[in-house]
Image (cartoon, rainbow, N blue to C red; front, side, top):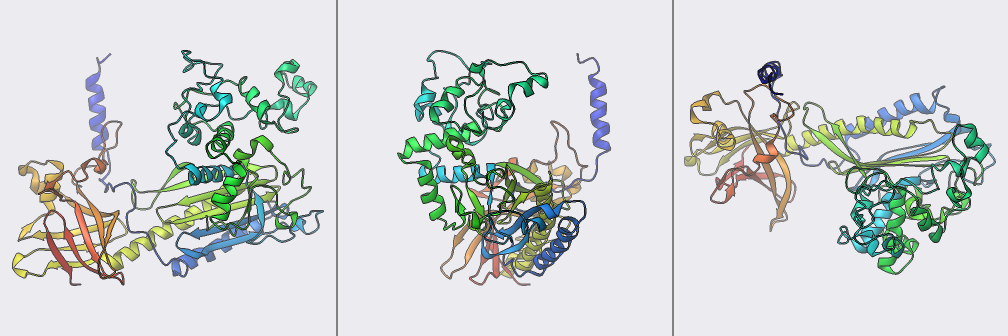
Length: 556
């Protein structure tokens, strides 16, 4: 089996020789402190103007998008300001002449139906009511119909026909790793949308009446019918094996919450989310038609479709996009410019039902988010294409603003008040490297640049002269308030040797700085801990390395 091990070794060597120059490996998370004061920032205003032009040209006024038949609303919001960074509302040209009981013009108060995006509201309600202390509890503890399906002593962990109900937890349902089937009868069940002759014409076999769900779209299932149906559906996977989207799981979460609180899910939702956040245009069930965009018949568009038992998974929440900034979901890392290893994490959720399609994205790295909602004859990729455009516009812009603000705040020359100590360093920021760069670091007359890298990476003294030192600082998110209204703000350093080529193989990598965090300490204080003194106005006064215990004041 290993006869040609030497060939494998040669291939690895050749791959290493052919690799490119080594890049900085930032710690996972922020490269710079979060940008602030965004609403009137020139770069944000420029981005908004560019979006107006692009969206107008390629969607609203294009001849090939069918924009006369769909309406949509977009809002880009920030957690720190009430004014959205950008809004855009488009009204289908045919809406004005359509026989509709809804609005004739879409604006910031228009209500849309949001489909599966309501799972976000389901989890907000759940967490607001009971928190996550029940995350590891089995769902069978709270739903007697599920408990009745658990057979003591039977191993269902690999069963093809019965879900492993005894192992499925609240957290598994919430995280979409329960292994349960996507739906029971409501969505995707062909017997609900076609009669038997139609399905047989497609090549499907005839079914007995006992195999056809008695409920689904019309009528919707009640609780006894739903749980009777669950006894018939097989699992998709064992619990905790792989993510697999399940609407059934969120129906169960709704029932479990009702058992925990002793009150209807709707009341929990309205008390803990709608009223608590003052979401004046967010509803559990259909509000007055005059509040919403209804692109046609209120029943055929699903505006008025009541899902009954299925409500906790589609909630019938209708979302006014003026509520967006008041208010988590699959993770997509978006690569940032200048470094293979920089990412921004976004929490996203899509939803669609009938004539409606929606998307919500929250990007905590920059404290921003955006919402997109559409109604009508919607092109397949409209909502996600708009989201792509927003991401490609705002993420690089926000990264550049954060870099610029970090440069204005932290960059400069720092030295000890006692000049006899001969201790100093320079902080700089540049567009080609992540984080704050440390240069010319001297402590008590000793150049630390190569030393700290050697200590961190266990490099022998005879190789110190070959070290290409890189010391970069990243926000730790830790801070303490000071008596004068200022803060002591923490940063973590990475100590890297960039002299060797970049390597990225299955077991060989040059980007593992996270394993060396705080790996060198002096008197219990980490060598990679830098603390900046910032006054009440946001001006940096000094920096201190925790291990060296020497305060360096900013002099330029």
